[in-house]
Length: 316
Image: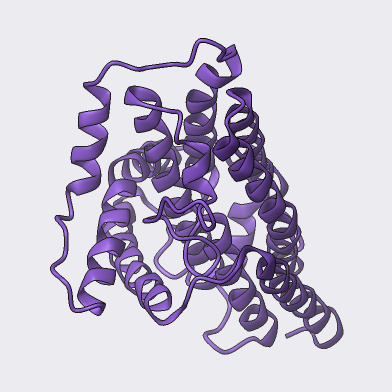
């Protein structure tokens, strides 16, 4: 384990935990500005999490241990995902575990526990949200895998650090396979993070909510961990997109730890631009019906497969 790897690993996890709520606050501010409204405070997500941690948890009498365990499992899975995504550097102690398939497995683990906890209490809203989330998940995960496999074809490995090392040294240009994969990844990210047009994180309407329906029974520290984990998931997807499609500025293996001092501010700038782009997409889009989600994610899967075919047939 090198000093650069150790420092970058600690710094990556610390930045993810600290800035994930800020990214959510930034997106909310950009959405308000684009809608010509007064923006909420950037620190509002931090205040909400702090307030929830100070409250006493209320748990239903018929709740099983799965219900109590789920917030910790989901938060731990998102933290582990933040540790293996090379957002700052590729020389990571967790590099052996930083596999594309393992990353998708982390997201799937969190989804399964969320669905089980939502159905555990037996309420109509929880079961409705769990079914809808699994419905979205089994369509989104194959598309995400195809995107990651397209990137792995360029590097000859499913290891995320090696993929980033390869993409960072490629000449700047427009590659058709990465262009198709980028559009597919954007569509999957919107669906996986419960964003418009698939879901609306600001609504509690029965006919539209998915993620919010699964956490209605949670309170206090449990709800704080789930909200923090949701912010981490958005942060992780943003970092995956930056690592695959904008890898410039990530410290590659064999370089000095001093480059981390410039990689961290550059990551924050790229996240700010990505958050503003996400707010723009949500502002220009309308919430679709839940039954239109298969068409949306089916298109994402088709684009991801097309990216693989273009790479295999044209090598571009």
